[in-house]
Length: 204
Image 1 (spheres, rainbow, N blue to C red):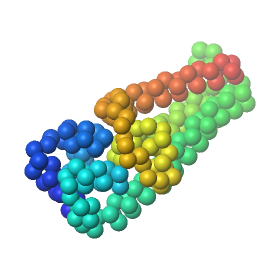
Image 2 (image 1 turned 90 degrees about the vertical axis):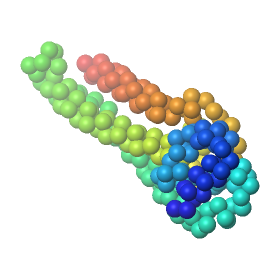
Image 3 (image 1 turned 180 degrees about the vertical axis):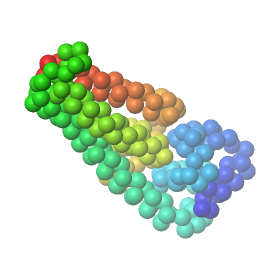
Image 4 (image 1 turned 45 degrees about the vertical axis):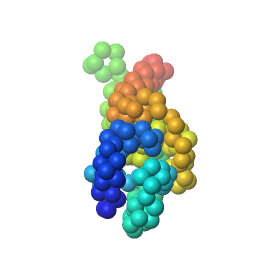
């Protein structure tokens, strides 16, 4: 795309680093890097801010790339909604199967006080929960690609609505996006472990 080279050229012409450009238009440095390497596309609000910052007309900046960017955002928005539905469904199924099997199959197993239903439930719970976490990770990647941090931004993006032009939130999630993803996944794994223990005690 022409846009990647346009952003890079205007930034270097003005002596701005990727960090400085990112701060000026309320995105992360990684987001700017992704734009300049043609991995992702800016949303409309970011394009407007770039146009204002570089004092370049929007149509000159994008040069026909708007349709491509809009299509990519629509596809990612649809994909994120599908992944969110799959994640919740898989999580509920994992818990339901565990509880159902553990309660229905009470025959003792040779493993320390566990029933055969407990073992069967764990065998089903683990892969379903892993698939749920895989869906969550893919959602986080989409959020990272479009620099989505706040709940309001995520909802607007999922509904195909314009994001806030003033992305003033500059907390940990935006400044350290990859670390934020790692923390979220670790927290989700911990929640899964707690759910497993609670389910086991409920049917034990």
